[in-house]
Image (cartoon, rainbow, N blue to C red; front, side):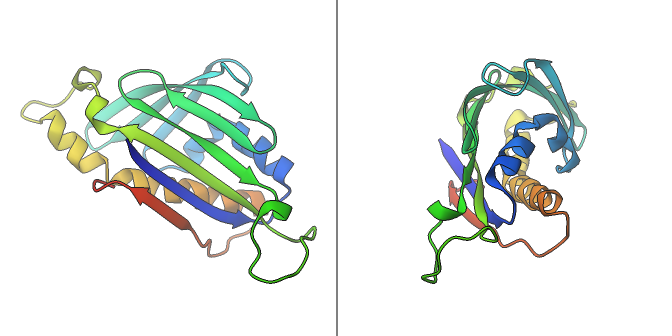
Length: 182
């Protein structure tokens, strides 16, 4: 499995951050390639299913995802339910749990940490999932699309932080990648 974790600090209440992240359909506002997120069934909790429509180059694809678990206000687990073995979570760590560089106590002004964790197996991707233009191989599409995942994850986290904080600032991201492809 290839793994990607994008994390940062956000100056907002952890409960507010969690509620914001649970509103999955809004993610289309943060991604260059995610055109629409439609709720198929559910209210954001476990068992909620979504249809995510992506468009890139000459290709359009609708992925199916499901919320597999929640632990308010700290975690939202999800998985892709067709065409590829993929899943992940949003993790919210309250200020008192965040390691501090200084010895100051956590205060109301202390940030919480937000992390988007993604794990996927590119080898499990189904070539039948896409209607490709003639003379375009599925392997070529994977080779070009997989590196976009990191940029998209970073963009989603940055834009979400800006909306949560209600202002624009340089968002410092910590990025962990366990893959030669991303």
